[in-house]
Image 1 (cartoon, rainbow, N blue to C red):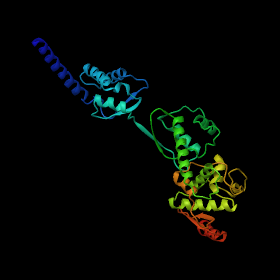
Image 2: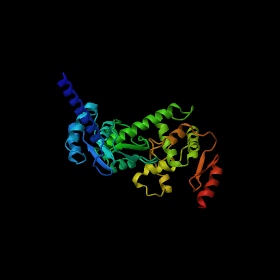
Image 3: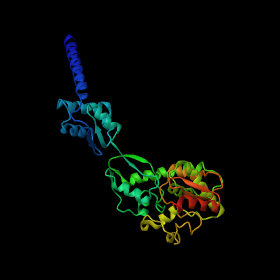
Image 4: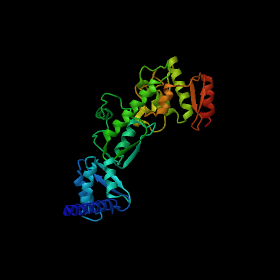
Length: 333
């Protein structure tokens, strides 16, 4: 019995020493340098990950540190929780800390902002240009892109929510665009559910079209509802919207930055000087503020507005007042 006790005591001491050594080694800072990155491919096992880290020369006390790390991964259950992606390995990170980082899936996140007022084409170009988004779309055709993100037959304009999106490396362009489209659908549904009564929109899509016009007409926050009020009253009275941004959108790439009188006199689906009602689709990506303004237009009697030249607008109730404002703020300037 004394021999057995001695053996057990020796085993306990050895085990304790091993655990202490493993804890020390696993919590030593990796020799990765400052701000290194590690790419974990999909399907990477714990043993393959340990080999990858060991081959990089990051582990102290080779080879037992690699063995410690592999055993630690299995004993803690982290071996089954590893997530693919690109990871930032900061100075001072230990082997155990690296394993936890990967199990938590705290990958490096990149950003891309879709800007309010951009067209679908501009947003698509930004997605295509981002180096960390994986390109899978073979075409820039709007109809094909919408089909790829599960919205076949839906007009692409205005269907992406303008916001700053964060994503990991190798996120596909389709996944990114689907996320932005989902966000627009949720936002529009939320705002539509809280809309004012008596608005001249038959569908949320019509409200989205109005929001896009408001987005292009003013960037001044406190004016959005007033601009929306003007256009809503025009629709209710059967007046034409007569808004330049829709004409410009209809001109497409033919627009050279100078909107001329002959443009206003040329018929087209988006010429709201010649066509009554809303244009057939949004003309840009409207933000939440413009969507909310379209659904909560300011009350009043103004039917006209003109730019003062400083980013704000002069609103008028009558054509005579409007013409006077045009002479004051536009013709003189």
